[in-house]
Length: 124
Image 1 (tube, rainbow, N blue to C red):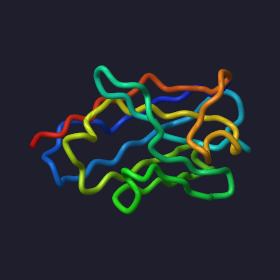
Image 2: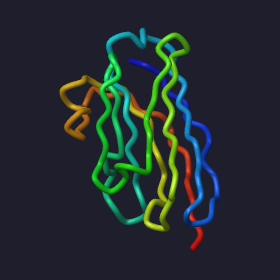
Image 3: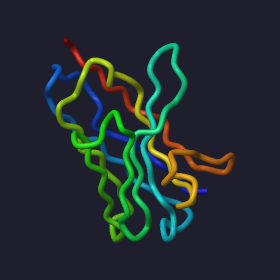
Image 4: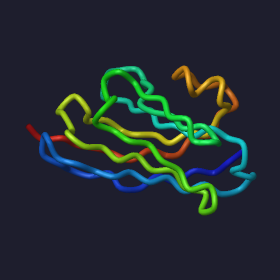
């Protein structure tokens, strides 16, 4: 499995921006699609964004146009730039590594790798 460590969460006012980062180590990063999910209290984990090994990007409707996912394969990192944050965007954000065919449709499999999560709080 790939080990993932997220960073960059914090408190931001509604309308503000945050940039989350995820560093991968362990098993080769090569070939994996990378993604971000989030989970708010009392809610199920939901798909946010994904990027394939060759750079294809996929977004949840709720964040499209405001969030941008990117990756640096040489540095084994993936980032999520979040602009125009809304109060409903407050959640723990998780980085994941999984296959292209799952992540690009917003799903994750049992053998996906996950980070420990980073908290994003949005004040209104």
